Image 1: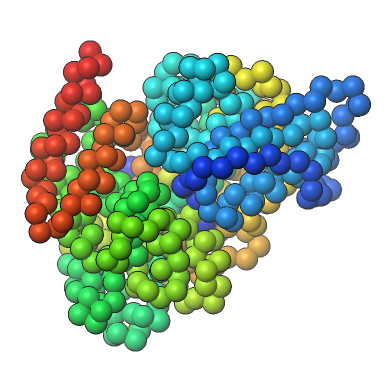
Image 2: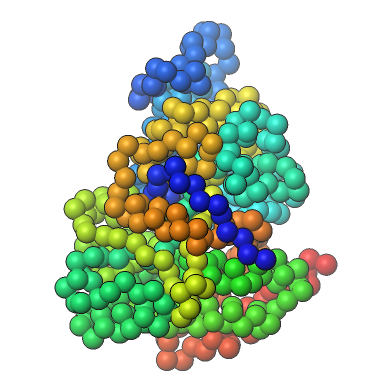
Length: 445
């Protein structure tokens, strides 16, 4: 079964954020609301209206995204002075565990960042509010409602899309006579050419989830997903093993090979630093999502950068760009401030809220209003051009790794990346994944 998204020619593109750090901030009023959107400009509440502080948890880390979300909350509070926000930022690789602990301690946040299918254990347990009949849910583009639906119920409000590919330095390519690779063999040849000239092919960091996941994401959930629909589900259900899937071994083999063309200190630097390396011309490419554009631009506003599709295969027709809804928000089912949370969701889905988001981080909207950013970065334009080809696959139509499966997969893959390439073996990696997943499946019976 091949899952590709219909082209949405009216959308403008760009950036989405994925990662996390460990800090906590509170937001209040600051940015005036735009005057023509009812969601933000209704009369201020009466003095005796209940004061509310909405607790929010997310794992975004990139400055453009964090700043824009703060601007959204401030604009909303300007029109609703009785509602303020307590925003907590958590590491992406510890996010689900932290939320589970909060729920167990009867400290469930009001608003939770994430995806229903990516946090399926909590979704099944009824920890997120059913948003199916809310007016703001009807503003979700019909193509992406399945991404936030579980058991025929909508649990999340997605506000933008994430696309993934290879961001490259056009000047380095030109100076070294390199053409954009369209096949995997050509990509390896480019990496070899750069290595011979002392230039790291890929900027990378194995230190945090945002970077190593981005390095693998466009291959793991791109072309191979088209060939193996719902392979994650077949493995987590016990119907298949990793060893049963030659296409997955191919993916692991590519990770093994391409990870040898990165900066030598990939083990020691973090996600942000790897983006800085790329932006400053210390690496020619970055296998990355559209969410990184804002940070790259912060480090090099004038950089001559572009994007091409990650080529998993040597047959051009087999290569696809992966995409999904990215920044998605849910409401805790035990929230004591449900009405206020829904009011904020209504604002995020409004034209005004969507415009603030689009202008701040240059996203493709996941909403029917299709609000566009005022200025589109060239990297974003390239992502959009790839999007318009229709050679795309929505990787969230079926659940990906989740819970213990996700934790185990990440730990094993990071250990593999940290191991000396001369001694690590893909066959051993595949066996280790199978053994680990079999234990999880057995323990859940």
